[in-house]
Image (cartoon, rainbow, N blue to C red):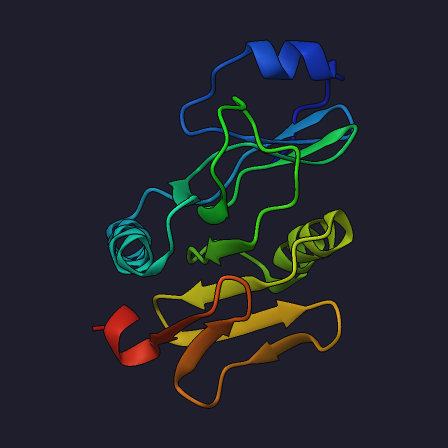
Length: 166
């Protein structure tokens, strides 16, 4: 859902939403989350990835990412180089979206496009209900993971779906 009233970037950045919302070209967009399967999967990913990333790289849940001058997305998890910036303005190394039952793939595809256009090299999309996972890259687009392993090149990470969807 988005509000009808236009909101400035400055007003969005000065506001706090619970849970945090995306900002898309003057509109506040709510994110679907908050149910146990979503939360469990998000937490599991944070624990798994934190143990794998090298020094200088951090795993961060629900941090605002400025994908365009008038667009901010809040991925469920992102991996980026360590920074003290309050929001991410340099493309993360990985953005992860965990689907909720209310999510529509068409809406997720818009988010993925924003990440990839920003320069994010890899996006993971995970569905806790169907136990399916997808990887999106600029070269190959969005595709379902059939190998049973989620991968990124930088940093070089491999995570088994059986570990994620246990």
